[in-house]
Figure 1 (cartoon, rainbow, N blue to C red):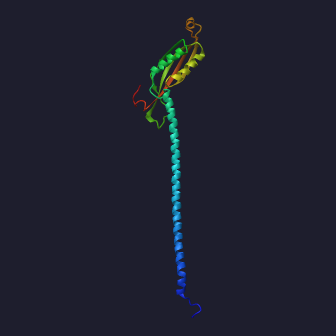
Figure 2 (cartoon, rainbow, N blue to C red):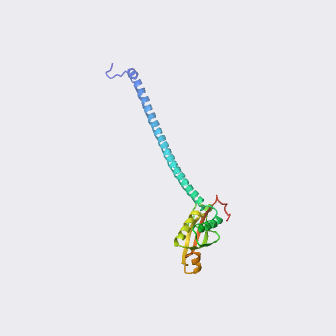
Figure 3 (tube, rainbow, N blue to C red):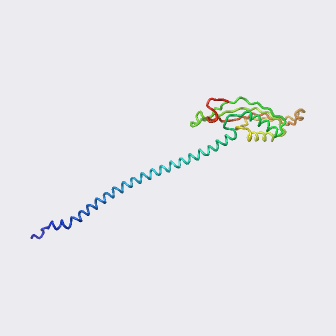
Length: 210
């Protein structure tokens, strides 16, 4: 028998099982690596979707807080009469009651027709759903003291519907005349007041004017 003669049957008998085991292990390792890569990709996708869901949720919570905040502000404006159709009867009653409560010697007034305000900046979201309107009130009041005028405006802002802005106000000393002294009016206030209101589509149908 030659010195380097190989008994292949002996070699196959003792190496076939380890070779098959190594081949199976290599296949299992490759499958495991592929599956691990697929799981990593799936995890990254799920993680990305979760981050997007968190961002959407945070944005939703932020928008909900904005809606709640502006809804509360809308209700406050509605309660004070700034949002809604102007009530002139209520304005007249408030003027009369305020002048009586403050013991003003004389109050006279005239309210011009209500006009629509052209806003300097228009909201894209609001569109035609919101209309800002203003009425100009001319007021003359006899006063015993300058503070009576401030109290008068404070009471109007607190009790009268809408928001008011004093456009101008002039005080004239009247105590020199005997008639005014007898009436108790030391000062005459001549004022112009703007009364603002906002009409929304849920308050009045579009195109309906008061």
